[in-house]
Image (cartoon, rainbow, N blue to C red):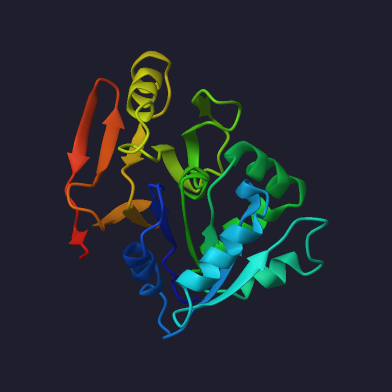
Length: 227
């Protein structure tokens, strides 16, 4: 059996960069990848779906995934029939609960292990990790410790565009035993291959990602800077 690389591109949110999205598509060896857009976290907001259609026009063939009023009978086949699965932002905890109810978490793991590129921003960043910083439970940021766990440790998006993200993440890691991990500024994508960070792409000058550990935080130098 051939060995298939397992890709996850975790984006910092704050408006996913078209340039970073183009880097995601470049991981697929075909000129026009098929992308499944999963908008569960935003309650499948049709405006978000329309925006994704517009953004990917001529670059990818996009299909939205709906769980309301109920999921498709061929949920597994639908997901595995795509090259990229993009998870939008929104309420991460609600999104994960719906996925687990319909066993879509298992489908995502199968897709990842089959070499389908998993990606997304904000909630679509947090979900792949074991834990994350979220506002899913109310207006105040809080710890979420039951992510999908495809990637080890924790994640925090919006590191430079929401002022409470950094102090909350630091406090949780330094004082409350939260697992260390990665924080990403807006417009930044972290590419993980087989669970290891291999590339950091930024589309904004000065924007980057940070490795956050107990008592320590350091910026990671971008490997790709897009115009």
